[in-house]
Length: 170
Image (cartoon, rainbow, N blue to C red; front, top):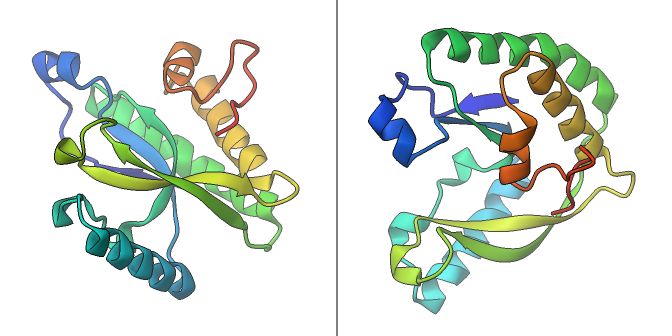
C-alpha cells in the first residue's frame, strides 16, 4: 500500500475546499494490466468525448483504498509509519497468491459533464472469489482507524464503510 500525493500540508483555506490531502492505494503494476489498460484507454479516447488529459498514465494505475485528510507533517509521518508497519501483515495475508480483480463499469470524476472530467476510472466489480481484496482493505482500514489516521465518519462519507462498520460493496 502506498500514500499518493505526498505534499506539504494544506492551508486551512485549501483544506476547506478539498477535505482530502492524500489517498491510500494498491499499485497495479503488472505488464499485462498495463497493456490491457493502454488498449482500453485508446478505445475510450478514440470514441471521443473525453479529453486526453483525463487519461492516467498506466504506470500509475492503482486501486484506491481510501482518502485521508492529513493536516500536518506529524500526521503524514504517522500515516507512513502505519503503512510501513502494516505492510508485513498485508503481504502475509496474501500468502504469496496474487489478487484477482474484475473491473466493472467505467466512471468519471468528477461525475457529470464530460467537459469537466479529470479522471476516468473502472470500478472493481468482483474482487476474487474469496473476497480477499475486501478483507485486505478491511485489515488496512482497521489499522488506520486504530491509529486515528482516519475516522469512521470520513469512511462513511467516502461510502467505504456502512453504519454497522462493515465494508460497503462497490
